[in-house]
Length: 116
Length: 114
Image (tube, rainbow over all chains, first blue to last red; front, side, top):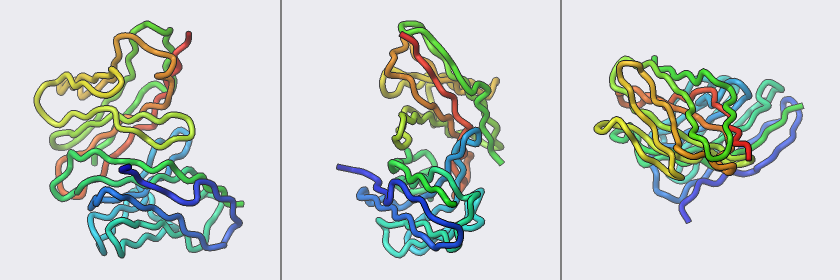
C-alpha cells in the first residue's frame, strides 16, 4: 500500500531533550516536506526537500533540522525542544517538485508532540 | 508571496442541503489550487485540484470546486451534504516557479447536522 508513515504518533518530552520524528514514504517520491499544524494557523511548512541531499527552509524552520540521506526517509530533528514547539506535525511527499508544481501531496498520519 | 484565505472558521449545514466552503487566494503568477480534507486523528487527504482548463473541477466523494479568476476564488461545493462530510477542510495554493511552497489556509471546520 502506498503510504507515508511517521513515528512516533504521540510523544511527550521535556525541554531540551533532543528528539527525532521519522518519516518514510514508499512511493519513490522526490519531494518531501514537514509541516506543523496549530489551531487557527493552519499548516505551516518547516522544511522541504526536493531530492536526496537537497533540503531548504520553509516558513518556520527555527529550532528544527532535517536530513535527506535516502530518497524514502526525511527525519525531523529537534535538537533542543521548547514548549512553543508543542504541535501536530505532518510529513508529506509528492512525485517531484522541479517539474511537479501541480503534484498532489500525500500526508502521513501526524505526530502529536508535547514539550513540557 | 502567495497567500490563501478561508474566511469562515466554521460552516454548519443540514444533511441533504448543499454546502459551500469558501477560499480566496493571492498569487503573482498563475495559481495551482488544491483542497484537502482532514478527518479526526488523521492526516490530510487530497480532494481535488485546479491546474488549468475547465473552471469547474470535480473531485473525490462528490465534491467539486469552481475556479474564478476575476474573484480570485476557489470555493468548494457539494450538492447534498452527508454527516460523514464533517471534517476540517483546507484550501492551498502554489504559485508558479520552481520550489515555491504549497501555502495552506487556516482551515474551515464543516459540521453536517442530521
